[in-house]
Length: 366
Figure 1 (cartoon, rainbow, N blue to C red):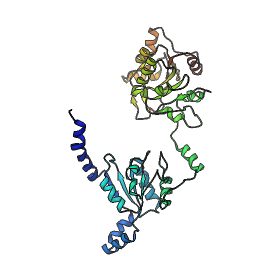
Figure 2 (figure 1 turned 120 degrees about the vertical axis):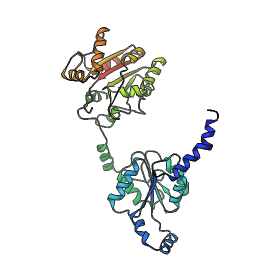
Figure 3 (figure 1 turned 90 degrees about the horizontal axis):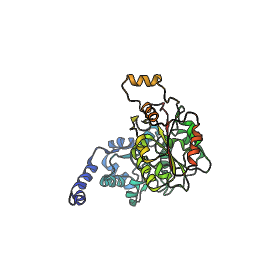
Figure 4 (figure 1 turned 60 degrees about the vertical axis):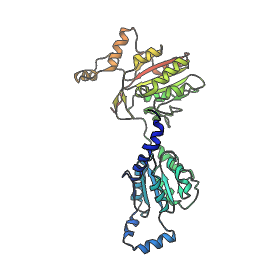
């Protein structure tokens, strides 16, 4: 462990740099015209290089690489464009990139969502991308690649706002499932003068219109910590998976520092955005941190041994919600079948300190 940082940079990192230069993960996909040009004589190629008519190149990484490939193939207008695909970007294969820059007059860098590669190579002078206005920040679409290639001869581009394009992108975004049990909650969350922090789970999909339920979102598990920064008591909407991921730390901090926040835990017992994994039950942990904990079942199945519950028992699966109900009955606690969720939320917002509401709803997808 002694001087391991120095050891890494003197011994290990050079090995990684060599791997980045030679790995098949970083490859150049030549344009059709370049492949056809192999039939040309070396003298013809030399003349082309002297004239400075080498083709345009694109450097891409991650998901943007597939967008670039699809655009080049489908458009049929950019046969001469070469494409350097980087699947290993740290360390950057600077030698391979340098050669690519020398062999192309102009190079477009397509990456999401920050100009990480572009910033490190733009000093060469023939690099274009987000910093030059050719590509937008954030998500890259096929039409963005086409726009950039059409304007690649321009040093800086001021892209006009295309409202039709913006609207089409809005429609193309993943949204809340039409049969999501939490839709009534999202519809209610547009409470005047109350800020709502969402999480990077399903709740973040409720941010755009027409729901506009979430005002701000930062990272997975951050909703509670973000809501603690509101000017007055606001709402943190967090899934039970995000709560287990890191949100529980935000709750601990909020309780120890005396912040005022209403936490709505969407308890669907599944990581619905990332593959359907099971979620650990944290009800007892939350109750040990926060005295004011309530429960609400959107599906109205509490206390009932319905068909679904019977099927689960036959399959040998644990029914965490039924266990929660039984434990609450033993402790003398009750669910809130007689009151609307909206009433409960408004009631807790009016109280000082921290309140937590576990809102049970079965994910229709899983």
